[in-house]
Image (cartoon, rainbow, N blue to C red; front, side, top):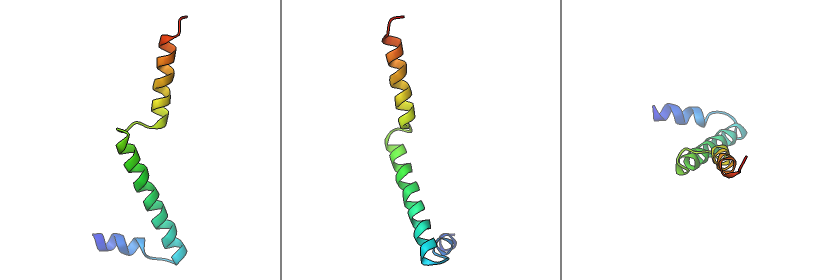
Length: 59
């Protein structure tokens, strides 16, 4: 199975292989960052901050 994945990943012109590897690396880094943040994205944190501000503000 690993050989099939590597063969598919490394098949094509050097430009295509470079783009595939760059996409794979970006996806890996994004996944690691998401896991490191506890699964919360920046939008979730922003939403939480806005909700906290709204709760503290008198009407």
